[in-house]
Length: 271
Image (cartoon, rainbow, N blue to C red; front, side, top):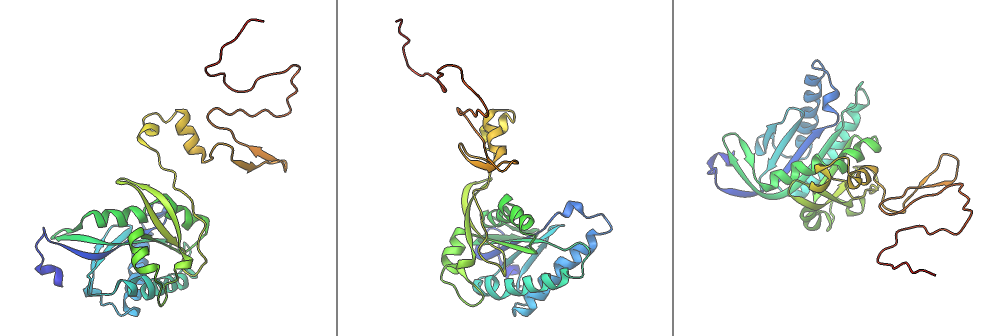
């Protein structure tokens, strides 16, 4: 491989692909080897169908997933287009006969990657892994009962996805703001074979909320509703969730005039 000639401190721009299995902790010890075997089978079949030699890419085992880097001489569009299409088809067909269907979260980003004798590292690797592990990717896979979800970085979407191409349809991607260890980023999500998914901003605890999980701020974040957001009530009427300085009164009769809210900076005068 061409990586063998690289110095450990020398970075090359490569496509990083992070692949994670859904619910790996729910597999028993006896089931995990079967799960891992299926992961490798679908990946390697997709590589072969896309015309990418197995020895042309760097592949690291992650137990319940795989970390891959692809050298720049292989077109990124081939991995985003044909390879993802073949991966989805192989996984979809295999899952028809599996007692426990395998779900995969796949994330891609292009950036500088450093190789050493133990594997690869760099911010590009961290970003790809963070996208695959994001709550948006996890939620989409579960909510949509999908076999596969793809997440790509903002730069990869802009440079490769947005122009479109064979097997690449930008209209099937949807953006979301997500919070990773390095800060907040925009990522684009796709459920292969389906229209653009409905995604929203990922809820991620900030340092202020994690310091006190019992604080009002933490409770609001866990609730997932903004001030004034409605939710369907159980009796057919709209239920209203209040936050911060808002209060909700239901079936209440006031006997005299009342003031609802806080008096801030007002003077009370005697009559």
